[in-house]
Length: 206
Image (cartoon, rainbow, N blue to C red; front, side, top):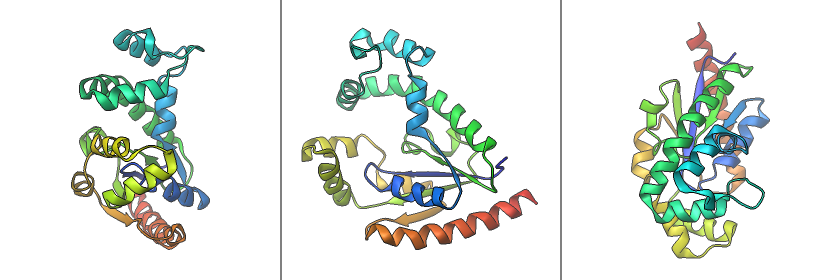
C-alpha cells in the first residue's frame, strides 16, 4: 500500500508520458488519468450512459463506443460542452486514480493527471502529497503537436488554449521538470526525483 502519492501534470505534448515511463522503469506504479477516463465511459458504463443523456446518441460510434474524435472536436469548440463532459468524467477518474495509487506496492505511487490544474488542482485532489509539473514553452508544444498528431497550427493553438496556461500549472507545482532538451536528459531528472520521493515517503510513513 502506497501512503505517499505524487501527481504528475503538464500541458499537451509536454512530455508527461516520457517522464512517467521512466518512473515505471524504476518500479513505480503509475495510475493514468487518460486510461481512467476511458474506463469512465466504457461501453455499458453508467458514465457513458450519462454522456449520451447529456449529448445525444450522435456522440456514439457505430460499435456503440464513444466517438472520441467527434467528442474532442465538439468540446474544443464549445467550452460549455467541455464543462458538461468534465463534470461527468472527472469525479469517476479521481476515484479510480486514488484507489489505484493507494493499492500500489512500493513506497510511493504516481497519478498522471494531464488536467490537474484545470480539474480543481489541490482542492480536487487533496490526497496528493506532491505535484510534479512537466514544463515546456508553448512554442515547443505547438511544434510537437503538429508533428505528433499531424494537425494544423490552428488546431494545435486551440488545444493549448483550452488548457490551463503555464503560470497556472507552475503555481501548483512542488517540483518541475523542464523538458526542452533531448529526451535522454529526462533520465537524470527522474532518477534524482525518485531518490527524493523515496526519502520523503520514508519520512512520511515514519
